[in-house]
Length: 367
Image (cartoon, rainbow, N blue to C red; front, side):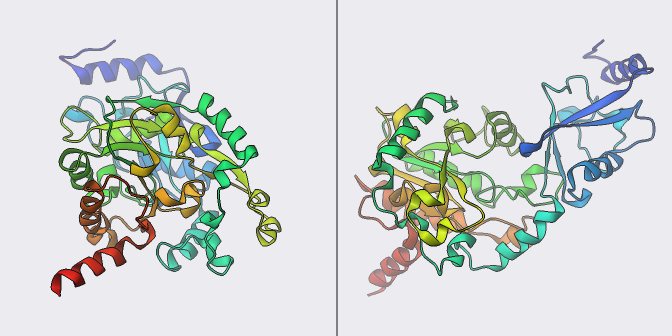
């Protein structure tokens, strides 16, 4: 029973109807899949209790968990969910194994590794540092090798690309999500607090003022990409910029370190990694986008190993609710993107040194 006029009555009726049957909350948790948490009739159990139960299953501490897709019944805009919210007050009418909520967070076993990564120099992929700083993207013409071409042909057919708006024949900016403009390890209950400062302003500037089309490409599934974008306020009729399309993990390519022809990499325990071949994008939108006018923002250098010239390694965004509030990475990138917007081709630009380029320009103007 649903009632637009009396939503609270609908909730009470529904909860009574569920008595006698064990209620389960379904949440999607990364590659682990669907996590099921039996909550009985709810009673006095709270979202804080739910987080404790999830911690026992996922090894993600309650303080590091973010729950997306849970809303309070009868409240305008869905209501704000916090640790004290009663599970009985949640609108679970549509929650199911097919339509689960979402759990974000890093298991404690991996959290120490994240701290090690944070302690390393910014814009430095930790895998590269082990090699003495060699760039894994230095392999020449890797994308033209027959074995890689064969893999790409398979990706062209299987990639899940969801088009949200009409593409233009224009320059293209491709954005990663996690740690590029979203702090995945943040602990705020409000997703918008985990958004990198100036993200909306930067995307508006690129799309509206400079004429770039925006593509989102994340290693998550498409369902969770769309959920994140919605929770962060990056899609919708009231958003001034338009995202043309979203790409998920199905468009990514798995490579082995042995394929790179480096004996040191071959001996590593971690023998495979995923990357984001922009060839998949160019193949799908071959009448609109071109390698010479595409730039890709990502915090992991290895993601554009097949497209070194298009990659711009962005400083990983972390600590969103503390030091991250003063982050100005996107603000500083605006003049660089303005320069690219005036060019017919980015082929002669070294995106790795965008800060040095801007400094040199500023020095030239001073002279």
